[in-house]
Image (cartoon, rainbow, N blue to C red; front, side):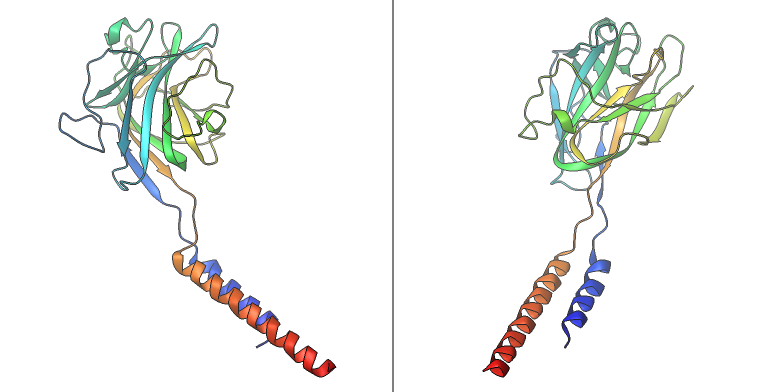
Length: 257
């Protein structure tokens, strides 16, 4: 068989054998039962800096650690906040949130602070979208959300404690104007690529300061990787190429002699 024929055969076999990217869902709705895929329900306020770690509902080997944070809208300084888990999803309570009263335990951007959550994953993922629930704040039903790829702040160990005082990453914002109740939004614009850390916030845009929602679920995807059979074919193919080259080398030596 000619060398070019072997290479062509390998390419033909490998190209269609690449697996599709995996898509995984995390459930933000709390439970009072013991669960590895749902957080335990909480009150609307508690100790700042708490975290929750859960597994994907579609793949128990994919884990996500969630923490709550706030950004001062005047100084951009970031401090930890309380992460709440509720029947409609994750929320954040921090400074000026009245201990979570008046729907201020949502992920919101009122009263001088913008709430956000940091999502840490044990594998690199793309944040495809979120399913959220908006209760409204001060009579306004607005739920614009911002997202950011946090690869620049990813710790060496995926679930290590975060120590964040500022953030210079790029935010993209999806408008969900006048939305109350359940809604879904996909991640677009600049929130691209794969990372072990993602940030989800109430709108970071100025002067948009009337947004609030809870995270009901999070959908992520992983990069497409070759199927195991693909690797086997590659190894066999390279072996065939090596054998062909050796035979040619032996034949060339014999002719020369």
